[in-house]
Image 1 (cartoon, rainbow, N blue to C red):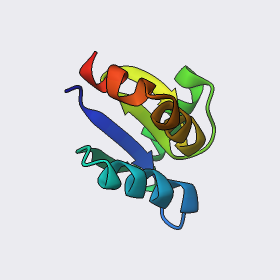
Image 2: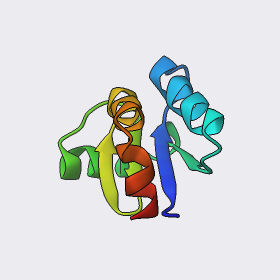
Image 3: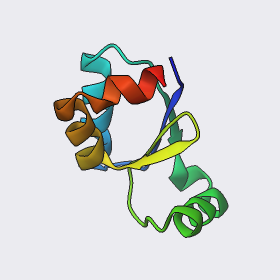
Length: 84
């Protein structure tokens, strides 16, 4: 299974939802708080043209935020991406 990284910030309800969804599916993930590293936040934002959190990666692939994660799950594509 590919690794999952969820970049978050405090008090972000979509971050909480993304983590809850992954937990409910028993998908292990690493959480990284972008508020602790503004340079990393800016770098990721610039590279992926994404200004909000969560920023979710499966392996090296940026998949988007909570809505994108949820859509992948509902379509059955999430497991395919995880198993690569």
